[in-house]
Image (cartoon, rainbow, N blue to C red):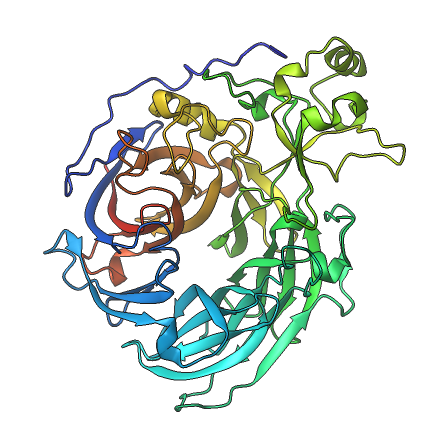
Length: 541
């Protein structure tokens, strides 16, 4: 072992109480001061399998839920009014992409309900994906109104907090042979007082070709221009609707978009996580064992979905640090340590947990051999002579909190996700989302946090972070953003089979008690692999 294994007994093992729901099991694990009551009260099964439920949006006025169904190229409309009477939710209507009457479109990626108007927005990808995509506007009953062209591969759509605009994160991914690589952008669509059938709407595309301040530590690749490399993944609009925070996942950054000038002001680099430190230890070896160790690896946070919350009039951004690599037939940055084994000459200036002497020993004595299968990027850490002085991995295996104004990190959960799941689910630690195998993901992003939302229960704020591979949800008290505390971990995946129960949480939405059909706080989680939606009622004991 590279370093002494950290004890995973810091969290005392507790029985996992379960609540029966349609023959499924809800596993709940608690630790810490607060005891959270979690009960799965309803479930929706798209009957479409993988991709059947991806992105969800809830309308408090009509008590309807809207979810994208990628498997059917459709959206499902679900009545939540009866949620307190029926455990099994059903779709009242399925609206297919083909019903929109559009040519050369291939997929629905995201959906959002207007906060007050009878309006939903749906992002639609063209075929091929490098062409301009669309945002389609429907009534909340699913009737077509109009559509507008936006940037290439709109991957996420959202209304501004005031409802006056719709924003799309246009990822602009290259085609597979990398012969075409559109520039990433954010489209800003003005929403009039009312939208008539086939109305023409004003669209402004905010691009990175305009003058914008880019931090030095924003990650850059060797392929394409920066404007082509920036691929907006997710958007969170500030409470006052003046700014939007745009995730650039592959670039390990977040861009700040001024919604008044409709221009990007700055791209912030998120920095790197030093896994040579004890607090950031990780299991990086696929050996069917649980060993959290310190390694000479630097994690790129690379968040996916994000959320924001306000404490004492200060806005904060919360990020689930998933990680993602560019991997195409025409270009791939992904490799393993085995690929560069003879080119590694580590430099202690990148690591706070090891001296230069220790790093030399790791390399010269073959102590890195156990990491040969570890997935890394071949782009970062490489010197002009072809040697690697640092090793970078995708994702942070954690969640982080940043001050929105400065994008300064004020909290990171370190190695807690792996510590907690090692105790709560020791037989399924770092398992995958399409099969049950202990330790399967230790050499590649571990539990893989995918999404995050923040909700208020009583006087406290709680963050819910979905772990895509493990298929569970972490809960933290973030009332004090600088000292967030773990509260609970729960999962409604049935680990007795590879895909049973609710598997791979893709999207989360918190519904506060005042807008909830049960008058109690709810968390709605869409699960991509199982094609299901789990509805959890949340309370504090």
